[in-house]
Length: 309
Image (cartoon, rainbow, N blue to C red; front, side, top):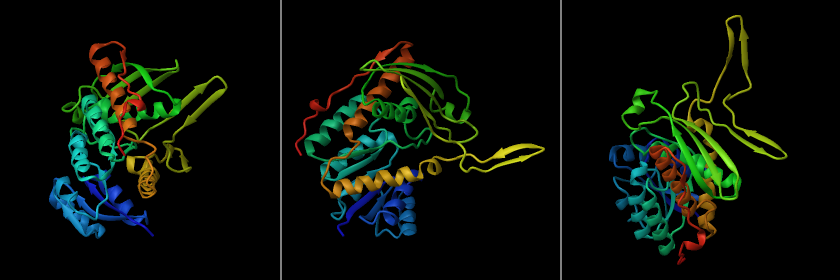
């Protein structure tokens, strides 16, 4: 069986999960190395997962000729730099969201990867480390922008964002909002609304509702099992309490799809263009919140991306 040699850059909570999946649950992949700015953490992860190599930087990792694809799970502010290094080394890329933190860098990385013929797949499942990754809209609401584009099969044309006040002191030093309501207008006239907040305090709560002319679809769950305990003291049930629990299957499915896509020499289903469009929506949301008015999203078309692969 052909195996894809892979390296993981950034082995915090999310990166280690990806590394574990590649190492143990995706037979078509071979985890060659892990890297982290904290080289001791990289060494410990390599030891735990029985990975042959560990490094202290992405630059060192891409020099390993066995590695053909790199999984980038660094803090978001370093995504662009890591992508550039991988492109220079000719490595295909799986990049956790967001693609970049700024629209300018997203455009630069989109054009750079296209010109180099390097394939990029975006991971738009959730994770956030307050103060390490990025900003509220870019690191949290970016999921909903990506999901909205997919559900509507359309681009977000305009966003009006309303930011809420701070509630959690641990977030305050890194973000000036932790709650937002956003009105979305899509190119073909469809409307959307997003309610986003950093911490619910009771569990990992994510729900989606699609209302159409012929009916409504409601998705999402908070309760982990069907068990409910009823006593004189009240009712009790469990809840999903962590993103790795809520999206465990999703992380494995997206990485398995990436590996199979690269081995089959195909283009990713969710690529750098999709990542760039989500960043554009996040940028518009940020501007809308700051200026208190609706802001048009600076969208591009796939035709505008010059590919040389």
